Length: 117
Length: 114
Image (cartoon, rainbow over all chains, first blue to last red; front, side):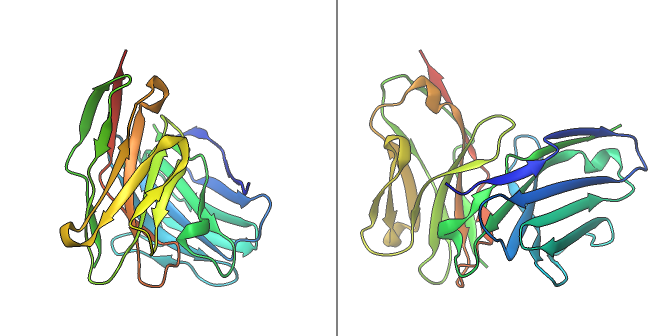
C-alpha cells in the first residue's frame, strides 16, 4: 500500500534554533499534503495545506513566518519550525493524497515528536 | 463549519467485551466521515470511512460504524475487543469538496483490561 515517510521521528533542539521536518510520499505523487500538530492527549489540529509548486494555505491562527512550508516536488513537503521555542514542542504529523483523490486515499506519516529545550 | 465531538475521553473495557465509541458531527450536508486509530507515538491508520450508500460500513480489524443522519452520529463498534485494540481513536469529518482536509474529534483513549 501507499506509504508516507516522515523524518525525523524525534528531534530535540535548543530554543531559538530551526528544525526541518520532511514528509515524503514513497510510491505516489502527492500534489497536496497536510500538516497537523497534536499536543499531548489532544486532537490533531490542521496547520496548513501544502500544494506542490505554490504557496501553502495556512489555517487561522497559524503563523506562516513561524512554520515555513515548502512543497518543491511531487513527493516531498517540508515543515520548518523557525526560531523554535518550548511552546512549539508538539507532535507534528503530515498526510498526503494522490492527485484526483480525496479523503478516501489519504495517507498519514508516522509523525515527528519535537522537543524544544 | 463542520465539527466533530467525541463525548468519551477515556473508555475501559474488558478483553472480549463489545465496544462502542461515540462520534457526533455538525455539518450542513452529507459529510465524509472517518475513523482512525493511533498507537502511542505513531501516525494514524484508517479504520473505515463513510461517503455514501450503505450506512453500516465495515472496516479493518473487525470494526464497523453506522452513519445515522437523524442523530448526526457515526459510532464505531466492535463485537469483541482484543488487548491489541488499546489505542487512541479519532473520528474525523471531511469538507464538501473531499480535498483530504479533515477536522478531527478530541479522541477517545481505549484501555483494555485482561
